[in-house]
Amino acid sequence: KWDFAWMSTDGLFQIWEGKKVDGIWYIYKTFMINDQEVLSRQAFIPENDRTVIRTSEHSSDNGKTWR
Image (cartoon, rainbow, N blue to C red):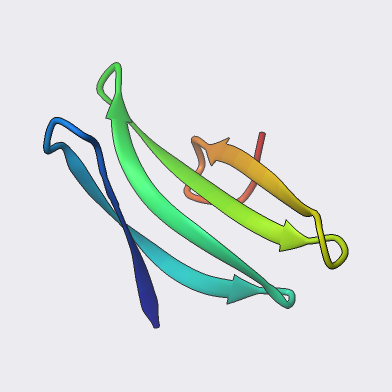
């Protein structure tokens, strides 16, 4: 298990949980939006030696489907 820590210049911070899914490392965090839990995930996927693809998705059904 690993975690990702994000901090803004004005001191706000978030801790994201990291886990590997189908060979890709994702970071996950749950947010409350309009009184509903939304699971967010992001990944930085290597495409070649010079390029990575960043993905950002969210799920309102606890990760069963992603948008």
